[in-house]
Length: 255
Ligand SMILES: C[S@@+](CC[C@H](N)C(=O)[O-])C[C@H]1O[C@@H](n2cnc3c(N)ncnc32)[C@H](O)[C@@H]1O
View (cartoon, rainbow, N blue to C red):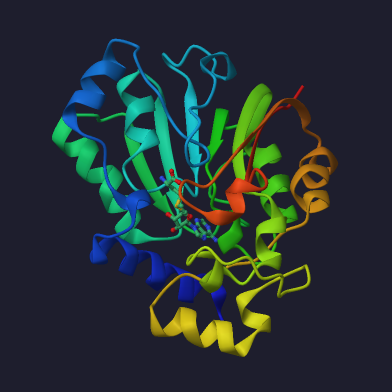
């Protein structure tokens, strides 16, 4: 199946359904605070990104990589950065354009595409790449790290959030009901399990892929990045999080 095409429609549907918190644009008061330099953004689900992970934002070229939804990128634009939001879902990008229009943020633009191919950007185009939890929706991630490295300037920073792959060994339908049942071997993908794929398709949910820590962390290092920051986070209200952190965030630099 064409995963990118399927997930584009699935994420468009997430916006239209109005039920996914990762599709909700920020309020005017959040933008007003950001204009004063007061901000808090998420790469994972609950813990705010440490403020010292960011460069001074004024005049910086920022790429929001798979970061649509009108959440973090308009905040960066309100802080004076020149922001490009890159995402596979036109509807998610509309959320960013909506906030930009509402707030007069002419320094925010949107580009639709697949994160594995950033060929629309020249080498060394950005000072900061902000890549929130999203690569679970991508079949392969090593090309994403390579492209991110290429489009970043020397001295630039990439901030990424991703899932700890351990979450994929559990039956998530049972886990949502508080029952822990080890069911799947890693690597996991909905496409390898017809019964899970059918459930995702019936609910128009995006298709997911576990990626090993070797792909996530080793992949960044292989691409040339030096990892300079790391923290873990947990899902809110999810039984697995009572036993282990479920998210990882990294700060990586292109020296
Ligand atoms: C959970 S949302 C992340 C953005 C959200 N603002 C946040 O804070 O988490 C996941 C995003 O990844 C995007 N996405 C999924 N597959 C993609 C791909 N192959 N290339 C680019 N973006 C992709 C989706 O369209 C969606 O907007």
